[in-house]
Length: 381
Ligand SMILES: C[S@@+](CC[C@H](N)C(=O)[O-])C[C@H]1O[C@@H](n2cnc3c(N)ncnc32)[C@H](O)[C@@H]1O
Image (cartoon, rainbow, N blue to C red; front, side, top):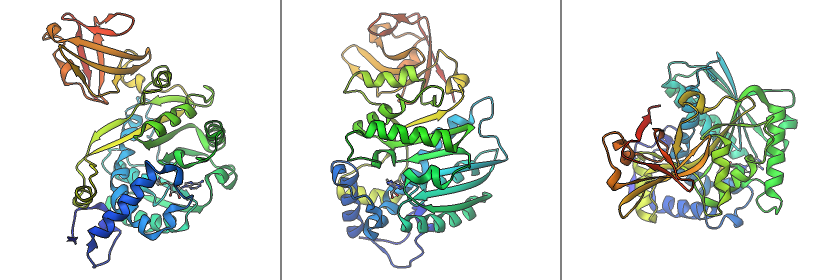
């Protein structure tokens, strides 16, 4: 089967009139998907130099990745101090690929009441990616009507601080790249942490935010936490997804990890490819963390007693449970079916990523318990 018009945002990029060969695309997506997941050890350093893999990335991975940055941006934009409410935002996207996160940022602000001018820098080691970034950025700017500029820099991320010495950015982005850095190195946690520390100290504004997005894989998600949870508090504080006390407790049990799952309606081409290769991209799945130098936090918006739901509902005979992350750590919360009441009825409808508060929850040590008298308050954001 071949497709011409498929509702894919990448259509703005690919102006060719020739139809997309779905068989070829599916084969390339399958190869790339394998390299990014089970065969990660074999991932060549500059894999996106390969035109087939680059096309697969643009057509299949970019549409989903564009939207992943919306959640951290939305959570930052909720803060009462107006953290993103500057007239201009200076943004650095490290390991930008085709500038995916910058496109997502333009899209986000185009739907937002406050529209800052975006002064963007995309840095990547692969020149072809930066060429794609320039073309896509120009198209996207026209489509979104945003006032934005792009500078591209071909460089290894380890040279970023030196190449951009003296500059300070409001937003630093590492989207799906941290796990690719120093990945054959046995000391990679330490090396990545020092690298990140250098970025935060040398390139991030005192009031800036660093958004790190990683794939929703146990290994990469835990490795991200191992890096960020060891950063010194005077340089990096956790804005989102939840306070350090809750987020970093994920590392205590080797089986635990944390990721988001945001409903997503994939473009037709992504569905077609999925059908052929047996994948399912019907939600945006990713892990993320937002770091700042000050103590601002999503809890300033929701209250210190707010919990974030960080698991699926765990349903077993006679009860429902969830894992929660908050300023009091990472906790399991349970409601026995027999304890259902009007006050706690919203418990059953909780989803991963929801924010919730409890009035009158029992602390049993091993777990929190919602009883008939417990009021369950879903916090709307
Ligand atoms: C999975 S892609 C992510 C692209 C984009 N940020 C996104 O989220 O869609 C990883 C990108 O990081 C770049 N990259 C990997 N290691 C790098 C390094 N040491 N220096 C600069 N770029 C690097 C790759 O070239 C590639 O474009």
